[in-house]
Image (cartoon, rainbow over all chains, first blue to last red; front, side, top):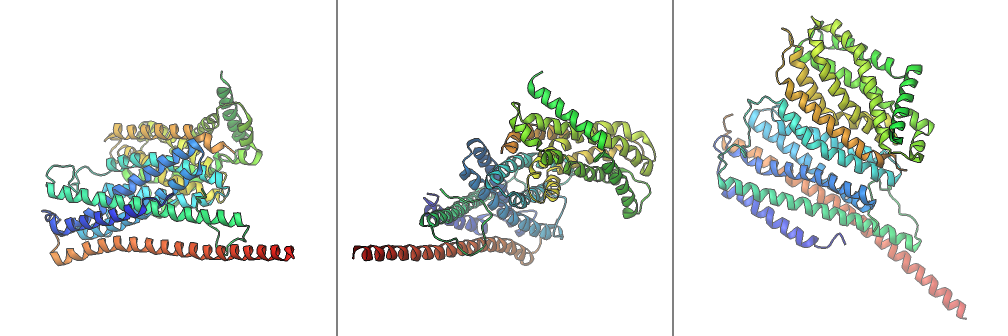
Length: 241
Length: 226
Length: 65
């Protein structure tokens, strides 16, 4: 059920990634200020937008879970947040590489977006110990959904506060808003955003399918009255329908 | 008065009376804060503070003292079955959230009544920064009360609850701390209080308070369910 | 900030894209491990189910006698 359309999605993702990467390296012009280093942004910014959107989507599914009581929504919420955290690692590492290339330091506190993202990342990193500290699965799902909703509301507030805290003198490095982004760069950027977004969706679907398969296995095992499997018990939420 | 209002007053009254009688949280929080000031004096090797350093020391200390209070907020409910009583009573469960947040707010305000003058005596040259600091303190306390109660209620029913509450709380209060220190730093400047972007920071604090108090009120039902 | 010369900048850009690639590949590896475990368990269960069917057959056969 979760696996339906996964193959088409994967093919679309691969195609989109191929097109996007080609545009980045063969089509997009060289940035006037930053030169070749600017090309990191075609990766870094879509990753961060996708990750943040993923957190918000996780919050939306959490609301669905709280309203319906159906634990499947919680499993989807968990996977969305989980993958957004992984993409978040990518955001922080690529952001750090860019900082090193532009400023000579592996981290800069001057970039408000990067700092905001770090704070959001640290918050969602606590999602795992928080979940696993609650033993009762039904309660765990409920509390995790509350966390996801609270954290989702936190994201915009956080960006606002950090942006205000930065000296407004500092130039925006990725000049998307201030005029003058040539059409070719915008096109390349959008292609990358689409590709990374598709990648996220594909991976979410893949993870959910794997979870569902494990869940069906458990169900089969119970139906057959077979003994329990060796190996560690899974603590992550399961999908058994 | 609606049953929820009655419940709110009853729970708040019980908590404040218990605290007054047993004094289990407030003195510890105050003592912790003052000792932390001493540690900062030596850690920073400074005997007087101003500007960003003063704001940082003050707010970091207040935050960590608040964490102590937050950890203990739902202890009575957990140990004496208070959650069951709330579940059985025909009232809006959010009354418990409101009462607990109000209690935490009171603790924080009382804490600051003691600790902020001590801070001024230890580190500041003049007390002229204190009156304009009051609205900042009140608004920040509202935010801490909302977020702290929310996080505390989530952590209370888990293992490692003393670890979990601060862990989840700290990233959530970063915007609050940014705004509080942002407003306080010019107030504590060497030459006397300045009001650089004071209104903006107060607005951010107010927005934070609104968002988190509303969220806490809205989701609390789901946390009390069995 | 002056732009880095192309050969230096190239290393950073390459580094960033390599990180991206590594993350994807690590994820694929974790998924592969999951799928392997599912396959192993399915095999176990299939064997268990067949064995139980055989036993049932045997009991039916002996009961008929």
